[in-house]
Amino acid sequence: MIDGVAVKRLKVIPDQRGRLMEILRCDDDMYSKFGQVYMTTAYPGVVKAWHYHKLQSDNIAVVHGTVQIALYDARNDSPTHGEVNVFHAGVHNPMLVHVPALVCHGFKNVGLEEAIIVNAVSEPYRYDQPDEYRVDPHDNDIPHDWERHDG
Image (cartoon, rainbow, N blue to C red; front, side, top):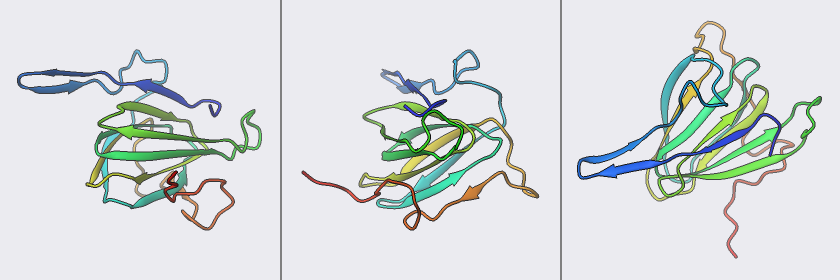
């Protein structure tokens, strides 16, 4: 596991009315502080990657669909520099993935319907000075291939 990355298995509690699933609590080990919560979506086959933040940590949960979440440790001073972590998260495998600052990350919708992702981040988005740095999803030095590999 990349240094600083944490995974929390999420418990879905169903009843006759529907479902409840806690995602992130202030007493979780991975919680640092609240910045904002946002929702994003991806259509089937879409890759939203790569990016990283210098200050912000992310807490990513897939609440609808199936998504491949990939992380790459580009931090030169990290004991896990160069490592890649891949998680398949979604309705059938509910989890929260904590991504520390400076770790490149992104995701691909590997399901057949629009995926819905909730992200609770440590810093509010600054429209005048975004803490968001991008790397091309396919043309880069990251040792990860977004293509499906059958076998």
